[in-house]
Length: 80
Image (cartoon, one colour):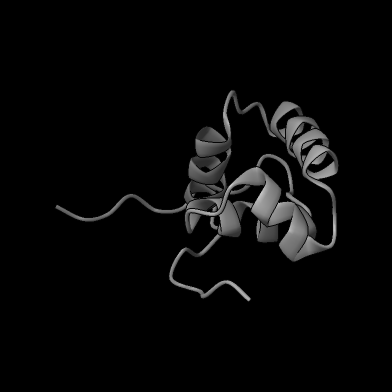
């Protein structure tokens, strides 16, 4: 059985949002992610909410799955 091919992205996720998703996937909290990106916890939470609405995701985990499935997020990359 072969792995399914990545779907073409229906919508693009911004580089900053992809960095945030990478931190969340690595186990960082929203607040920790905000700190890493130079934002407050509430600012990153609002940014993630808008991004989820934009791509049709219901949760951050769902957004991560969409980003991976569409080839926009590679979870083998390290967080910096």
